[in-house]
Length: 178
Image (cartoon, rainbow, N blue to C red):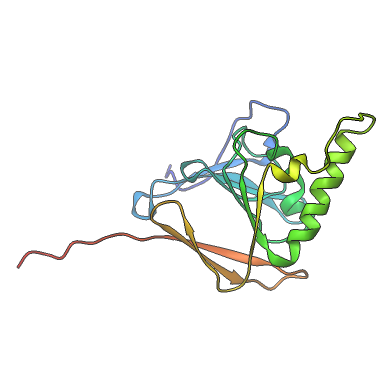
């Protein structure tokens, strides 16, 4: 069986949406990357690439890892509901999302923090917001990502403002000797 076909990923945590989590291994020609995740319309979409420490959307947790980079395509709950579960850590993630979703995401994070702290007097609603960096993106942005990678943001057609992300690596090719 080829490694590019998805295989079920055993779950070690009840916190993960493990019943549908699959793992793909991609061929070396595009990089030695593993894709762990799931995508079901109107339910949850999350795809984790451990080699890049990156999560594409976070509608549910698909790994116990806390990624450093999170790319959100749009602000529907099935693509961003679990964002607050990824923010309580010593290494705050960089969260990329459409410009129109930044303020609603800040509001969502703040309200989740208030709900978590309900009944406690010493809570700071801005604490979780400071535990991540929300970076707005828009159509045609070109972002530097890691050492040699770039991310092209492109417009997607959806019922709310939405963007897609194209990832590519800059490779230096040597000229052949003559």
